[in-house]
Image (tube, rainbow, N blue to C red):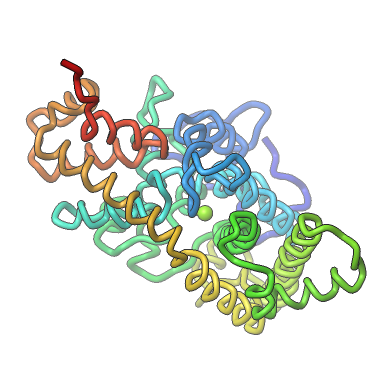
Length: 383
Ligand code: MG
């Protein structure tokens, strides 16, 4: 299928894709990147994102963001910017929807716990796990394991990677060894991700009562929009005021990326995606001033929200649950369901640990809680 006609020369073009690991004929009515996006939407890991969280554990309430709604928000922000900069919207959407597929239950706490458990066996990195999901773990197609996505989608999914892991994944890991750049679409999703989580953590944090408007007014990004909204609409109720502030914050960040990146692209004038990859730094960026303001907000959220005692209690519980599951399964693989147990047979401990980690990382918050309960809280029989 032909590329969209208004695509910039430096965008990812269907016609210049580095292709799939298992060659396939082109889809008849879709681009290669549309096919990637569609495969991601139909994957099991994508559906599980509904029951995985970032900061708030899923069962705490129905109003908080989940990994699924987060991924949809990243796709929305990414696509708006992609269209304005004439980048490939389908690829942007595919990367955005897949970027968190490898996340563990319980957000960052779960990831840290698994990484600690896996330290003797090669560690655990969530971006690398997202790539494992799309390359190996999804079981959907007759001819290959995984989703067999294009190089460009895989390149975008592998946002960060240690050098030792980069050496294991062939061409898609090379940029971490030779320090080159990914496509502009991948650079864009990285920033859309930051915009989405900073702003929805403000919104969710306020809703949970863990942070207050007074505290947030210490932060320029929030105060600037809050003062404008309150002076224009003094009688607005709090819920609508907060939403109005958050949407304006997001808008300001989007405009900043568009304008800064347009300037960068006009200066660098990359000929095509290969020139983008060889450029001496990312071209899709926030302005310096905006990056400083974002940092201020990020620092605030770390101190006041992620380290709030109620969040810390949740974090500690999450770490304990995943570590105990890991230790129990590794100590006695027969505790695993048949399917996973069979995968561990005749494997050295390091590979058994990887099978167990894949199993735990794939769990939703509530599934991890229920597995933990089954293993550690047996009902006491009445006599
Ligand atoms: Mg994310």
